[in-house]
Length: 257
Image (cartoon, rainbow, N blue to C red):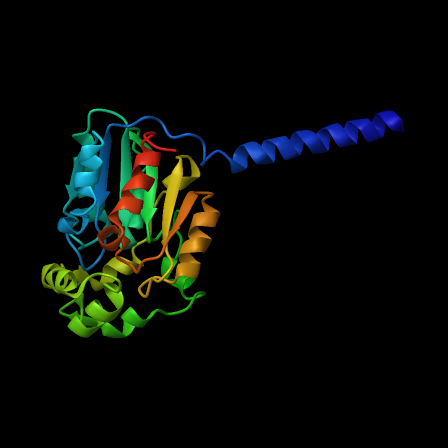
């Protein structure tokens, strides 16, 4: 009886150890990387990273900001893969907002050493993300989305009040003028992969986000067991709090604890 009890206890301890190992797989120390590829989200362009890029470059990182076409997942993935192909070694792949979809889809590339999600989607392979989002509060920016000929933009009022909350008004006005029309069908595209199952993952939750529910962001970060920071910012934390966002990328690149 004692032997059987001992065997059962040993099996339990072993199983617990394996569970812990799996739980920590995504949060293992990131591989040292020299390159960072940044991908902007919907209703934006590559200049949305302009506050973060100098901080990364000052730390000695080679930075590429992808111009996401925002027409389809296939088009955006192709553009991101072209950028990754030009990198010379381990690369941190970063996505903001919708482009967390790209991080999940394209992050399986062997050059990608770590994934960073900034107030971003993080779908599982084949997941209906629209249905998942419906389980969380609908955020105010939704009412300001306007459709024109199959593409969407955010009204000026909603952009300034909700999408760019926390960004200085004059800077938000510039970002509004720069916003790229986004295909309405883009939000329903589903990924074929979820790189966060196998790559170290990092997530920046925007606590004052009015575009994606902060609770949804927390759910996604917890599901992928990501190294997570919470930022006192709206959806555009990369603009309003670039130092915190850059620091998370430096951690993903093995440059900062």
